[in-house]
Length: 414
Image 1 (cartoon, rainbow, N blue to C red):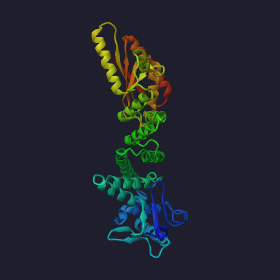
Image 2 (cartoon, rainbow, N blue to C red):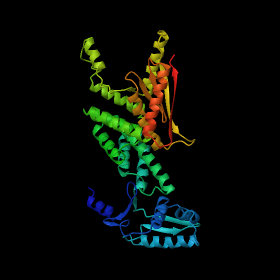
Image 3 (tube, rainbow, N blue to C red):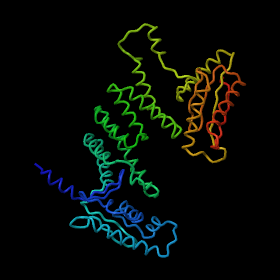
Image 4 (tube, one colour):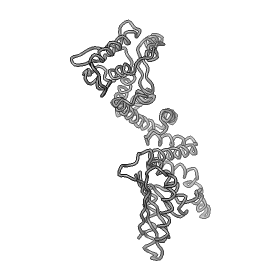
């Protein structure tokens, strides 16, 4: 039997470096990052060497990263002084031998880590590689490695330092690895339907980043909620996500998530009972028992296309009356495209205006990040123009001073 007290003792004595969600360098109860206030450039030098551990970085590259376009009389001397301070800083780490060593190579400097050092980014990537190699041959073991890897990810890489371009690039890379790991482990756990584990994974991931753009994550979370009789919570999660995506990015959840949302909602309304035998009047009441908000009908592009097709067929069979397809576009007053955050808020506001100003029988869908389509059955051409002008006035009133334009055009439905 293994004496775990010895393992715990060794673990408490090893140097641990954490970079996901926070930055710390610690040995047991001793922490380097909290030891004293030191210069920003000293820490950035340490982090740059750490990120490129065991790889020599040319002196000129380091100087460019640390000082950029600053005018220095002696940049190499400034770097040499900073290296001296870094070596003194590293030398105070407890241990029988230095776990970190800063060496000079042929053209620059390199940080070497002792084998005893535990570095979360290295462990994270290593676990993901092991999981990927076992995914086909031993899915259970692979799932264990995936779970261990994603448990190490506690947020963005080196948070608060993304003003450095290399930190931003590394953060995006690790985030991509994390989201891919989430997709893989959720797929592995869905096969035996391990709802408890899936729920824990989803809730932890959403606590780190509530609107993580991973369809499989939100789909699995809604699926497990519905399977545990919490369909209303699943619906609320989708609606909250949809509202945030619309406000921040000017887009809707994917068709995958929208389909899951419709399925859960329909199940809650008992529309697809396979055992109950109902008369026609009861079925009609169930199908029509939908809480319709006032104003136009907001739908996705698939439903809108279907409604447009029905309207076109009806117009071909009944030549009297007219229906119109309308397009509303938001753009900047100049040639430059509006910023995504402003465009997202503008599109959310335009959606509310369209729903409020159009009739209950009209339909609205978002065509892309800057355009809405509307379907107006039984409209006259001059009425369309009045409607378009009114909607644009409402938009300009809501977004006065933002240099945004709202334009429209209409075409008859044939």
